[in-house]
Image (cartoon, rainbow over all chains, first blue to last red):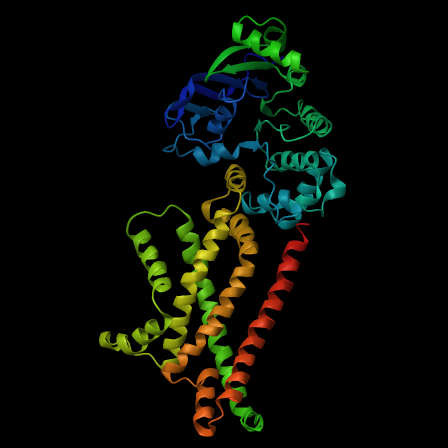
Length: 251
Length: 218
């Protein structure tokens, strides 16, 4: 369990975001403690991914405020770059760099962004690959890997960059169940690393097992949040009940 | 048929071929530089005067004949005290013209790079320049290589027009031999074959580069 005295690493205050006429986030507020693991569930189009993308500035919020380590990350903030470096993102479509091999996919960003020497970057990349059990694939190019392997390289890339916060945007949605399982296992193995993780997922059992807290987002607002037991087993909100019912029927 | 004419003029033709090649290679190098800079800049959302200038450059040089551009640079610019020797004028003309076409190839290559690549590099903390240089351009270039080679062939063939600036390259050499010998069939056949040979070798070379570049992707 997360200690109450731990500081809030992310503070989201009433953010709103529209795409044209469509309001996707309708006032979302959320505090995340350092080291907390939060799963975000909800149906497609409910704003889950947009929330993550706003935290990482891939989308600009229309109003509200996002603080990381108590520093605002809006466009005017001088701490913006620095705070963004603390967050990493794992995408549904992996987004590995196809012109780099596996080792370079991890080491090149370290050299370019963190100014590591080549030896240091290679060593760290190799060590990180070991934690996702892909040390035998260093010389392969992304196209030669399975989806699950690609996603594990993508996770390793964020780990190596030393991100304190990792945002997972449906990391297993492009994978078949077997490959999804191996990626979920990799994520689980990181649970005790002290990193803060926000995971958008459709794997309810996985969310139940790994999370400190689960958010159910519907129609641009957080409908329900609480411990996995509260949200998954004893949901209070009608929409949450409906959603979980449908999911249970499906699997 | 009297191909002895060609044989007798071989040193002259060789020298002219060399001239064609040097002008083409130098112009292509400049065109490539122009293409990367202009193509990259135009692929991002430029606004105001820079955008107008670059749009005008590309549209103007693609939308008017190379021959007129060469005349303009060589005969027109001295009005503003810009006097160029014929080789320099020719290279500038070929480079500006080729650069305009090739910048569109680079731009198309950049636009075809997946959006996820931009997002991933942004998330990792790449600056605009780092992202462009390390992530986007290598992938765009790979896509652009076949068309860029076409660009080289285009400049090579376009270089026959610089004969009007009295540069004795292949085309003008052909004309000179023809006026001396009145054997147009033999001369122009050989000249055409020489141009073809050069472009053909270049496209073989491109195929080689292409296979090497895509080898690691598959």
